[in-house]
Amino acid sequence: MQPIFTTPQSRALCPMNSDQLRRKIEKVFPYVEKPKGMALSFHADDCDQCSYLRNDLGRYTDTLLPPEGIREIYQEMSCLSAAAWRWVLPSYLLFSLSEKAGYDQTETEFLIYNLSPELKHQLETRKRLSALNQEQISCLIHFLEWCKDHEHWGQYCPDEISSAITFL
Image (cartoon, rainbow, N blue to C red; front, side, top):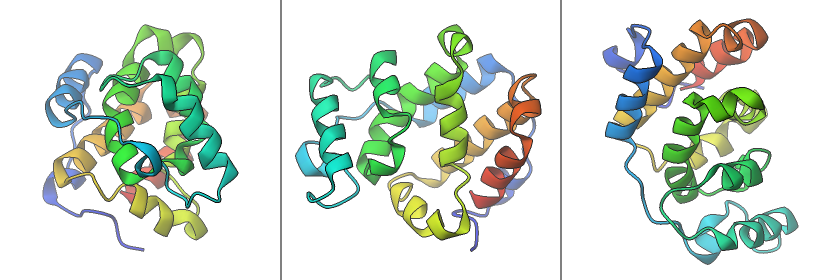
């Protein structure tokens, strides 16, 4: 499959430090309203996993998803709709850069995995990312480049990071 967006900017990236990346994320990923009801989930209402996730996320109504909310979704990102990805990514990406993410790096790990789907899951992943614009996809690539240069992520899952960059 072809990358979601292929632009000179998304292919010729200079590594960013954490502060530069944080500013970029804040610029291109505005906080948006949480999708309501079925608009939150990717699958139809007969999906129990999506139903449980909608229920678990019911207490989060703000545009900012707190770390507890990120911990609710990190294993269930495939259950989120494109609109829900737009809602969670600003909080999720900034969380991944924070010191809090350093204590239990599971959330960042699962984000990398979600951005590097196996071939059989690429079409669904493209649908989940379809509400993002070109600048946001480019920022995700910058995030992955940051992960690639990160002392932990660059060693722990370099193949998944490279796969995600290629996918995007």
